[in-house]
Image (cartoon, rainbow, N blue to C red; front, side, top):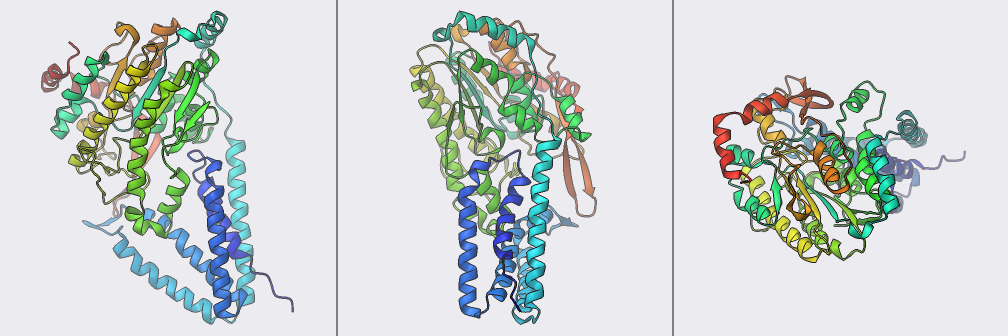
Length: 533
């Protein structure tokens, strides 16, 4: 009887790669997949070959190889599922609890695999199962591509003005435009009230260089994706968020309109080069619409997720991720210094996770290795760690700004902004006014040529940033919106285990909470130290 070939180890290895991609498709680039995929397939073949030599049984070696792969690739997913799980006051979502249980289960199935007499039947079962898993991933990918219609936000004023500017062809007079987003950079009031930190030295340095500080600025959205989608399209995206909730649009719509935004399309149409300093994460990592993409590290989103969702998550903290993360943050600011050397007018998008967990620098730039180095870490504590990295970020920002201003042929436009504030209070389920203020209030600083800040104002929010800048520099005559802020609704999914799940696209308006907070006397007093006057 002809033996069934053991295809399943290689099919499962392939599935593990495309599963990660299809489940993070809006945040990853397919270009980052081939290299790790080849490594995984090569290691799978090597393991299978070694086991075949040891067991003298290719089919049984295939079963053991697949069990090893399942054990390796699914550990991180299981850990994530229980990571923030408590029973009473005890956090059970720890490697020290999960690993022994996981190891015992693996040894049990390994023993069964070595002793089973049904090798042929298991081979058929695994072959069919892995083919089915791949088919489901392919269907998921196809559904994502077909079900979510492509979205772009039209802006008639910009299109009309672009036509006029193209006729004039004055590109040699256009200033370079830098949009620097320091993820999670809080407002000076936030830092003083909740962190006991005086950020006036940094703000004063910016003012000395001609920056206007919008000292009462709040983000429009509490999460990065809707925040950047809104600021780069100069529109509120509540209607899109509602469509996502209803299932009418795919969740990746915010990434799509961030990659191809009104800001970049307008500027490219009048002769600007779109320069992207890759963030290493999400829609600001790779962008096929960018004219120039600048990498800051060899570590990309796919590799980090692969590490985080596999058994490697146990040693994630020590896996050279801290060094890579430090390199990425420092390199982003170093690359900013080189941008003036590029010919022609440029729009530079630099979204850097310099004030977002994990916190890997102290105030002087010394190395820190936090307990949680995981991708997407939202551990904003201890507050001292946040302030340490923010203090070093201030130095990196000033260094980059000095070089840009010194090397630029024409005075540039520079916007330095937080996409949202920090979240040390972590009250997503039932947010207090303090938490809303902490999360929503942001750094928002503008360098406008000739120091003309007449159209700027203290409460300007990101949705209006480019409206005001374009009105000032390109006479676009766009309306300035009312500045409003929204937070996602958060539900408690399991009271016993204290797990919370944010529903990022069901939005609650918190504008009045922020306004009320700013009217508080103690806040008014603190504003005196950060006044633009």
